[in-house]
Image (tube, rainbow, N blue to C red):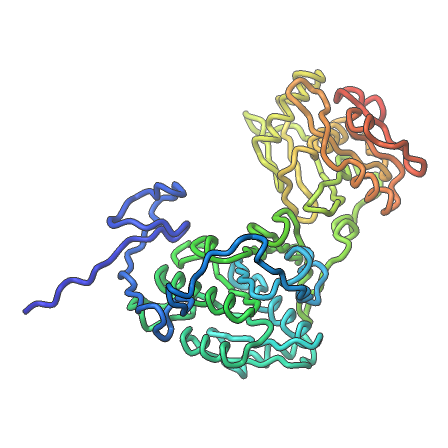
Length: 459
């Protein structure tokens, strides 16, 4: 008798949406051509070895009231990096499952190896599990970051059931799985890295982390082609999702929080890659302003808020006669459509004829800005280049610009002023609306404006 056809389902590799049939576009995330066919995972009965289950019988489960739930006074585990701990909301929560995603080669393994070394040096037990490297290869990489001390042990294994058995026996404080795409379970017939394997292995690690109070980091790769199941499949399973991004040729790395059940999702951490591993940049404002030319036209310093941190950065503008039939606009580090809108406001509301000239805007340092509070700095950088007049180097400018040319308020204006004052700037140009709820500054000049035309007269 012929063997029956194996049952399969289709998964979206971007968001994990499941369907019985193939579809060109995912109805959940609207991505095209992302469906992958995978065999159905047959889960073993609850309580069986390796199954993603709590192991408790149904008769042992009792609903409890909120008042009956006691909180442990256990402190968070400090990562050894102030930048890392702040992004996590103050440290690593015991029993949490944290996903660290990013492009291959960005430094995810280096970051977590250094974190594991610092945590173990602080008296905690750590197990680092690699499915990509042998133990000798791990040691070669570890030699770059210096001597490792404390209770830090290494395992080279890809079978998730064996790994969980070791973790339940050893009960470490911290565990690193590098990477989740290399792990597999024999319960699934699909290949390691497929949607089925990644989801099932992550589910089992979540149960292990919660039951044994083991803080667990999962490394997830995101390929440029998008053919491998990426971290988006796991976002609903884990407690925290962190993305480690590269600043391309500028050498720094930015750690962003996309989901965090134990802290803010707006925090970022800045690191610099060196020959000795990653080094945290505790003062990003100074780092981003390094090498700034004095009295350069088209250069304006602005201040953005990233989480709880104020960061100064330079906005560069360049205006030149067009060499083509149609004027060009180019934006590096900011939204192109936002730049086009600001140029239209400048021409319509301020009477600046820039329609037949090329306009370029660049955010120095490779940073990307999404906040409208940089609008005023972008307009001033364009005007500085157009008139060939330098903006005073001790001036910081921020504010949102509306379609009528009005300068609108921005949040946390006082924090931005304090950051400018700390770095030695002597003047701040900002929305006049924000001045109403602020105390008068004594050591720095603060000028409020209501319309973009007022700014040109000041400078």
